Amino acid sequence: MIKKIISGGLPGVELAALDAAIKLDIPHEGWTYKSRKTENGELPEQYNVKEIVNPSYFERLKKNIIGSHGTVILTYGQLIRGSNATKDLANKHTKPCLLLELNECTRNHAISSIRKWMDNHEIEEIFFTGSKPIAAPNVHEEVIQIIEGICQVEREYEKSIGVQEEDDPAEF
Image (cartoon, rainbow, N blue to C red; front, side, top):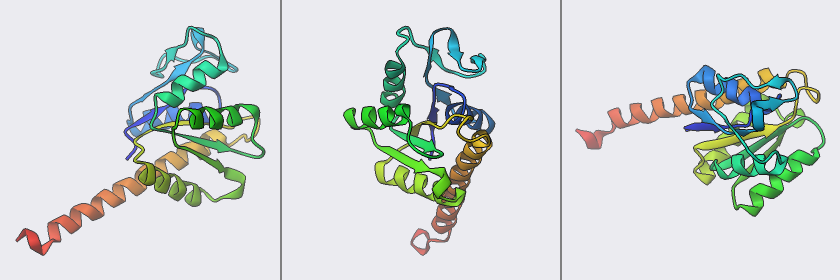
């Protein structure tokens, strides 16, 4: 189950993850640049992210990676420098990392892959990062739909477990 979404709020995957957290009432936090600066201006206060004192891109990444149980990188096309750095930092800090190329998989495949990865690594707090809108204009909506799908799968699973427990003859 997703218990917390970690993100720095950069345009694209990161901002979409924060919007999904707010929409689905999932706690969220993360680290962003000083003065909450992003390529699209100042990150609004509605997002529960802290400003990093050190303006280093890598320090921001490191804090978000370490503050999570694992990292999901969602990309469209070839890995960019930031995605490679994210993967390397996650490995360095022995944090599970899942990379999904969204041009090469369906939304349902992305949802099931993330769920399996979460189960295999006991992930409940996820740092979402990846492509920016320049790489894929629909990235914002796509990421929200993926996170909604993950949560829907979780709700259906919990319902099925509840039904099984209620119907368990050992209980009578």
